[in-house]
Image (cartoon, rainbow, N blue to C red; front, side, top):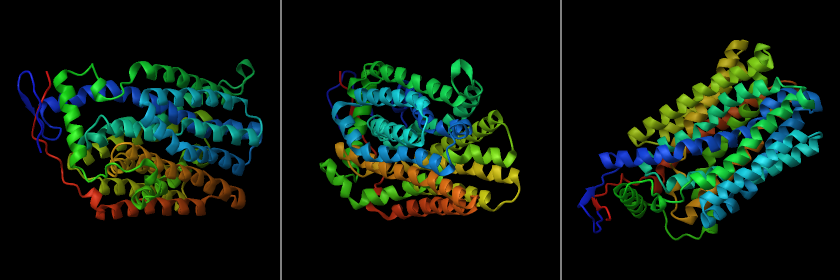
Length: 454
């Protein structure tokens, strides 16, 4: 497939993303966008999950039961799921810069307000509103990345953004333990310091979005003209050659069977992962009988290994061009972790087993997220990505509650962990089933000579 335009200095060859010009362009785009998007997502994940560190003190101070904490942790995802699609459609309409800035500022304010919680009902309301405020951020960035990175480098680009998920555990564990140590300073409990200190930066970053993000490649004056031409041509012709459907009304994607089928692996993975995300520190503390600071440090070290696994698996997925087995491999590790923590009797072995949960879940992410953008083009793609993410958000409601209810009713977690293991296994099996769908059988796109504009 070829394209050409009038150019000063002749034409340039574009064949996938492996020419010197392509590599230089991708490198410049990556350096400009990915570190900043990583920081945004880091604080996004800190503000939604720091409640797991805060729980080490908050549940005791406010006398929250395990069921109350599980409900409050999970209800975030109800608000998130309900407003995910409308938020992403607005992002596609008004632009990523303005909408992501709005999302960050509002979630930062609500995150700080979490320090005012005194009753379970207040906890539920603020967690729900936090979900509403954050709705659209992750799928919005996934959509945004699809407008900047060709498909054959998208797993690595996504991984460098998504690595904020496990690294939020490193930063959250280290900072969270220190902030809990401020207990009593200026009349605030340690868990209150945690919410305030991690919410304010999100507000400031929301303002920075307006200054640092560029809406689309055509606006990227920080790219050389030939780099801008290559990137626009590569993305345009890739879209034209793909099996993704064009011109589909965005709302029609909400009832499209293929979108729901693609959502199943992510939903199942989310159920399993968020069970760990909100209860992991408590499990480690109970197994090893460690202090709050030591527990936070152990959680951070586990997250560091998960970050490395995410990057390595994503790079290998791009190198081979294979997505399904790479995602399923992560799901298998995820499953073994829960089986181990459910059945192994030795505390240190249970901690090693629970460490496999975030490692496997992280490996799953980048290869999987190369799939939803392949379904549609344009605004319909934004709606489909948002629906996939909103469905997985419901998994975030289910996962914590499985463990919370099990602990309250039985005093143990073995049965809950085995249920979570089954969800992790389902994510692997269902993602492998997607290989049979025609939309995912698109051959690699090779684009011929493309000219750079003068």
